[in-house]
Image (cartoon, rainbow over all chains, first blue to last red; front, side, top):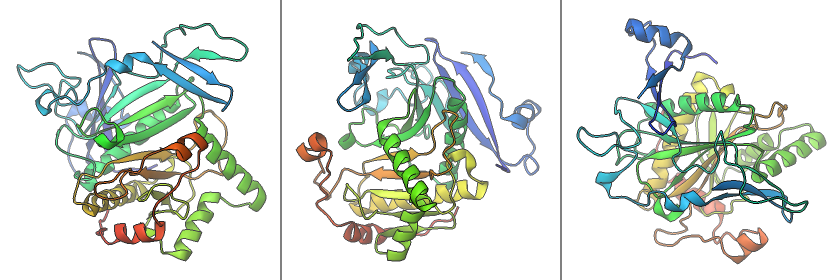
Length: 52
Length: 327
């Protein structure tokens, strides 16, 4: 599958241990520059854990 | 307390999930647990508001990745297994008063992208054999929270309804060399009377064999098996098709139309299902603006649905409320 938009995920662990994932679909970064931190994630649409 | 109990009479699993009796039931709008947490307000399930779509594990799950041990002892006849699987909630928007029908095509496209990602992620779990994406909408369906949301179940087996479809498709393929759903789609397009909407990649229709008055199916024109097989153009066309059908539903009776929406796609058990065909089915419970279709004796006790309406007539009614939407 090819796409021009990137799916960015941000995974959070809730106090009771369940996960919560925020999804943001970013426009094609060749058209809209991404912030550096986002660009790294945009490449693979990786999920990263964060403490809540 | 949650476990899977085997029904030897029907050859299917039943889940017990007694903790779900205590889940939040129709809270007031200002106490919605699915809204973003407000500054100084009570903590909801979702601390942030800056997202397109949010997904989280259900607080009252039927299936868990690390399940409880069954509380009953099995016998040769009454098999029991842990209720292992996944139950997720998918928030379509931070906006409490929205609905999928009210969301833009762009937002629905984002949802399609998220569904695809969840299918990939949950499908990779060893204990998940079928990823079932669905939405129950409206109090008529038994919805307990009005915030626009759907759900995803990762079942540890292929559920019986899907197993029957797969078997029928495999038999048809063996007999004719063709896909059963491709043949149904061709038949519906040839007849044309039950077609509701079409775009470049999808066709919506109330099938010849509809069990509910406004039961609407959305088939992909191209033969493929899962969300992950779609091109970007098809994802956008699917979003546009869902928007057309959902807005048409709402216009039928000038109300926020209740429905069950289910996505049928291939299992994720490692087997090959080339004969199967991705599609979405809607089961709206209304038969008129004020009357519900109930699952009564024949439907529940015998498994035979009685449709009080003709699909050809209902398709015409729904088609009259469809407005073109581009992807």
